[in-house]
Amino acid sequence: MVRLTADKGKRPSILLVDDEAAVLYTLEAILKPEGYQVARASSAEEAYVMFQADSYDLVITDLTMPGDSGMTLLEKLIAIKPDILVIMITAYGSEAVAVEAMKRGAYDYMPKPFSNDELRLTVRRALEKV
Image 1 (cartoon, rainbow, N blue to C red):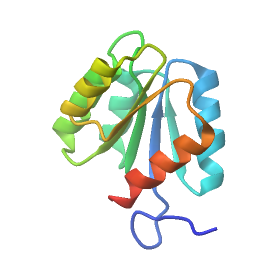
Image 2: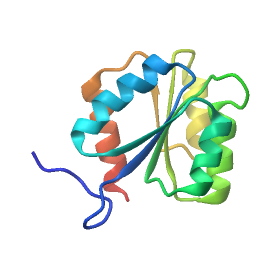
Image 3: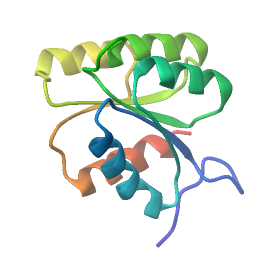
């Protein structure tokens, strides 16, 4: 299997953001075997601090979390790095929310539950843009 890299010699890095530990664990378990570097944050605030301190190729964030929402995080990340790729995930979404996320700069939107293969494909497509 061919692994994608954001640039030669560097594995793509993904920041996962969700307030549910089980979701973070599952996302990491799906993506790490694909060859990605994975970091986890349990809130938008924690993710924002991590994003300022390190470089990530992709952020996958839940939309609905205590404190700042994924939409707020999206806006903050784009303010720092306008070309950052963000995939929004949520169990509480609607078509209107998906359209709003895309208008605000999200790369893609995935309603929960999603299949492992759907996640892998969406991440691969996003990182091909890096």
